[in-house]
Image (cartoon, rainbow, N blue to C red; front, top):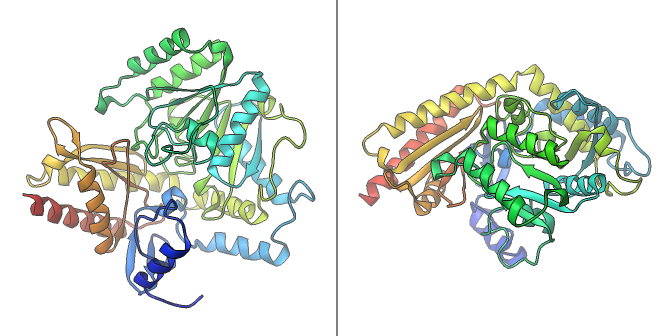
Length: 434
């Protein structure tokens, strides 16, 4: 590789890589540390994206780097299904003890979030002898065929890629700001069982406790508790997808803890290994042990580099009290966003502000009274912030939500600096439209 500038690298990228692999910013990273990164031209950026929730422990955390470096001195790969290694077992033991509920647990590792979802569905079908799966509108569960089938958002994830696996059903996710109550969602689920599928054919429900791509919609505790009850009544397994919410992001180790329920299985990835590819399915032992030997796994599944990184991540979360830090960062960001919403110039475009710990989002609107989404302003804000040295992400069914996934190691000063950039950029865009 040779050093270059962003425009030259972007030209090479467009020639060598298909456009389906979307890139939000034409900015090529040269190095990163904590909650900051620098591009190949030396420009500094504050990172409010965190690699899409992968970097709760920040870029290049020294403890994680040291663990991976030590593992590289020993070996990088053997395949756990050929000759296993202790770090896989040790990380599984720790996760089994950390996830909610008193029932004995087991853990298997794969490489990506989508793989974790695929395997959770496989295990659910094997355990129940049923084939149907229920997911929810606005959900995102991956880009594999099963992941896309479960995902409740057509563009850009599903359009043109079908047909998808059969016996996948969707129900409304409760989003009060968009007029869908908990009662509405539960009634729709009841109607689904009456009109579309016998609940005795459903192997599992899969749900994010806070929707990621769907717009950081927070699942009400009473709704998750109701789903747990419905699943128990019909012999359905409840899969909680914590791929984006897990590992201190929401102020608890896992977001489902706010609802006080025990899932049958959980899918984990992203911040599990602090930037190294690793994902997991953790579930009740009676469920996880349903599959025959060889039915689960993969060549790279449970990489030794990922497993030692995961062990270091859990140490960092505990030692640096990152659950508490998530709550502090979230409160700071919400306070700053509320301040913007109270400004005369910005109040018309700022809608609902949502937060669970350090998982924070704001809706941008064309009209606050009608709540009409403004996807164009959202796109423009992402680009304007980048030009000013701040990386942010958009999401939402209507493409009008800014989501914040600040690495939890960021200082208050850095968070405030980033929020200053956000406020300045939004002010400029709103003034230009006036």
